[in-house]
Image 1 (cartoon, rainbow, N blue to C red):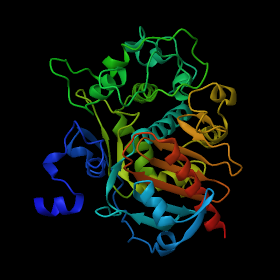
Image 2 (cartoon, rainbow, N blue to C red):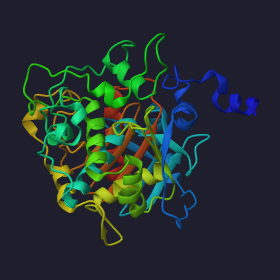
Image 3 (cartoon, rainbow, N blue to C red):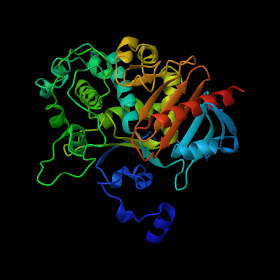
Image 4 (tube, helix red, strand yellow):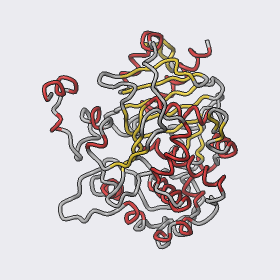
Length: 395
């Protein structure tokens, strides 16, 4: 078995651990086997659903398309963007898919920050239930954060990444606040002599920056974990149980999902979801259809429409992501592309994408294992690929 593993991945299983699972080449295995590395909670799928066989993907892997300003074979683009799996849906049907070696229709993969977009939809469900007011203070739902930067921020500020925080999302600093944040979520090994924090304990230490909440878009992952805590408190249910009952099972997901948890069992709503690429695409199709599945309104239509169109353009222009998405906006934990096709999307580090193109009636779900967490050039190549697929689908 050890020899087979080494032949498949080019390294031994014992070479991968908590200290290096996000690093290339170990991430090709680590992103697919999260429960062997980090504690997780189960999000069961509804019984009675079966998964169809893999579809014929010859047109996808053998096609040549205009990707940006180059004509390229799609399979080369997939390789250059470190693709683990990709599914294309057209009007709810899977029409093409790609799976890297050792990856199948049942293989699961971590979403990283694309998890945020799922959390945003759970918030919308509770708003429609009358259990959550986005204009209420976060501390109303999570009193433990009253003395933190979030104490005078509203849920809306966190949903739209417009809180005022002293925090730098620096993936390369092993001792900064972002590294502490990862250790609190049990994503990294504890430092020698350091007491392991909890997620909520870490959040309670964050300080407010010298500006008001509600200003520029400022991407900061702890916002999403705060939204996850608010959702749990408002619903009176653990995050994985709420997701299973109100989203995952009604959606008709075919496979159980999981979410990473800290030592107290708190779910990492900002980056810990783990699922199959087909179920990820089904979630995208739910969004494309305005929150509707088989005639049932799972996510409120008004919330989905607000997510697609409601971002504050000025906040984005003044924010810290405008350089790679100049026409964009952000709402309810989703990005709006600003493109003529009204595409909107979820995005996670190392290349996790859920791209929804309403004009083309198309959804693309993509898992990747990029060697670097965030690379603008690869983001642009992925977006160019999604546009090329939309043109191919339209023709």
